[in-house]
Image (tube, rainbow, N blue to C red; front, side, top):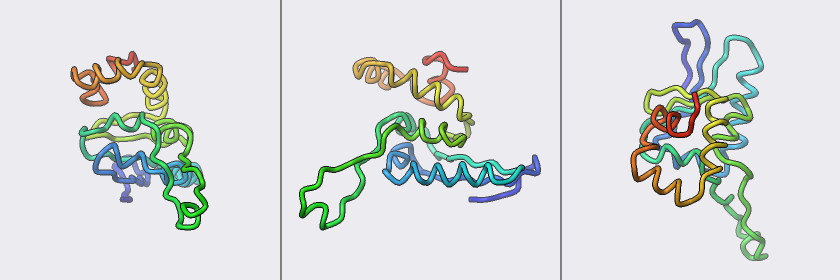
Amino acid sequence: MAYRGKDGKVHVAEVKNRGNATTQASLPAQAERLGNWQKAAPGRVARYEIATTKDWQKIFDKFQYKKQTKSQKAANEPKVRPDGTPASEMAKHGVGARIAGQDVSPAQLKAMDDAWNAKSDTEKYEAIHSGKMKDPKTAMQYLGVS
């Protein structure tokens, strides 16, 4: 989606219905393209738009494995996945996110990703099920990110 904002800038948003859609192996290349487009000229802003808070925290999960070709499967080649997380890739390329209407800057994405992935699996499970990760604002408070 592309539009000119009230701020006079050209905005491009890559829309995802839920956070788990960001874990696709194609996201790192996509985030790089968005970041490059944004840096190519002044007055450009790129972001990911995640429509709902359902599974939004999956932006801190590892990527899915890349799809293999028939020949790769036949040769029993190991499955591979990109390094990092969707949030780390967005931040690396200077691309922010808007999650259910809440804006998250690239710096906030990186800080949240680092804090979240420093936690144990048990801590993550408890945080998700206790509501501490219900939306970005609540998660920032829980993770100590401003």
